[in-house]
Image 1 (spheres, rainbow over the protein chains, first blue to last red):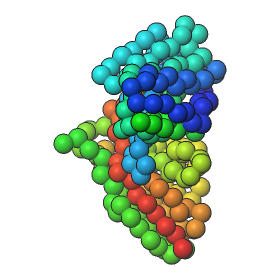
Image 2 (cartoon, rainbow over the protein chains, first blue to last red; image 1 turned 90 degrees about the vertical axis):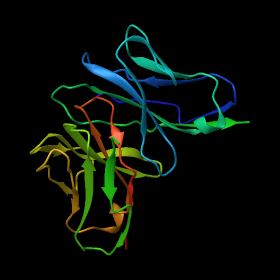
Image 3 (tube, helix red, strand yellow; image 1 turned 30 degrees about the horizontal axis):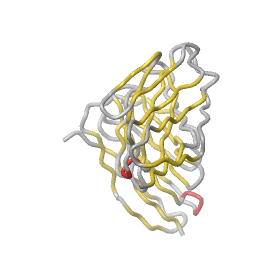
Length: 112
Length: 112
């Protein structure tokens, strides 16, 4: 299973774009990259998932370079409500292996 | 409404008294999983199930049991709880392994 490494914490201000990078050097061919958001005492919530290049949805973008050894979650124009912990997860989608390992997460603090 | 439910939400018990935390999903998902979350340690997978009657160990299975007799239910059993199992527990489900996971609201367990 690919291990992920993220910054422990990041600070930002309202209205700024925030980029959180996750390193996953041992990513396997069949692995997808998934990001979750978690508020205190709540279950994580899915943000975005991708395999390569760029994926965008209504809340975030995910950039994955050609070698796929890292990925960057981009949150445009953050607000105070984006203060949360963000987890990067790498795993085989729909394959034989069911084990999933979450990284330590990045605690994002958005200030006014 | 698509959801994952857990019961109880809060539980205080004593060492050695068997307990079960229930988890149920109404999305006909094949994959279900249990996690525990402790300060500074992130989310760690306890057990997962790829489908009915198929379960396997995650990263921290010691002291826990699970069963998957029906697709919608995935109870977590602590046969003889100990204080080091005091934690916040989350159940999650997804269409298949590696797809977007939906998390329950969490169960805060205290073992004295």
